[in-house]
Amino acid sequence: TWVAAAQAEVAVKVRGADGALLDNIEAHFAGLDLPQGSERLRARRVEETLREAARAVGYYDYRATTRWDGNALYIHIEPGEPVRWVWPKLRIKGDGLAATPVAGLTLDHPFTVGEPLNHRTYDDFKSRWLQMSRDQGFLDAYFSEARLRIKPRRLQAQAIMTLVTGDPYRVGSVSFAGSSLDSALLKRLSPIVAGEIFRRSRVNQLRRNLERSRYFKLIHIETRVNANHTV
Image: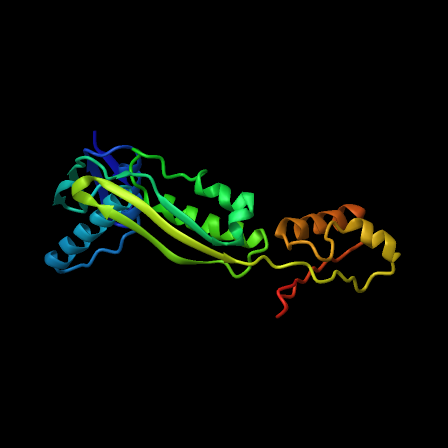
């Protein structure tokens, strides 16, 4: 079955691909600016785009032929076997080892053994893990190592990451300005307590509490990171 992907002035038609591979090829070619006047440059751009689209979803050993018919580009692809996930190496250095939401992702990850490699899965998890760490108070968290080890001949892909969390930041103080409300009421509205580990979810809850109270027309919450590891 031929499937056409709409493009500025070129209709791209793909045969031999389905699922994630077909979707990614269509997405990569949609709106692609192909060089005009040079068949060699145009062919190179098509080859590079097809390779990028296929490898992004695990197909490193594909074979493809292309031909032009007027403004229509026909791609016939033989995908071959995809590269598949093997068990990842996910490490934590620092106090994040004791933080369940952060440490839990070393087991609750999306790298299912035997499933086809998808580069977006790796990128999304990397971003989510780092954001989770910072939301749990590890504001200085970073990756000392983060890479994909891909072995095309063995059809294997392994996610390797080492997350360095350091120590968590704590709440130094909570202050309110620009409100005539009683300080005791404001304190009751705040779920943030001085001395506890800083968590972004508590800041979000404070905003919701202030909004629901209907005492405020404008709410601005500022968090300041201090040199003494407090916020």
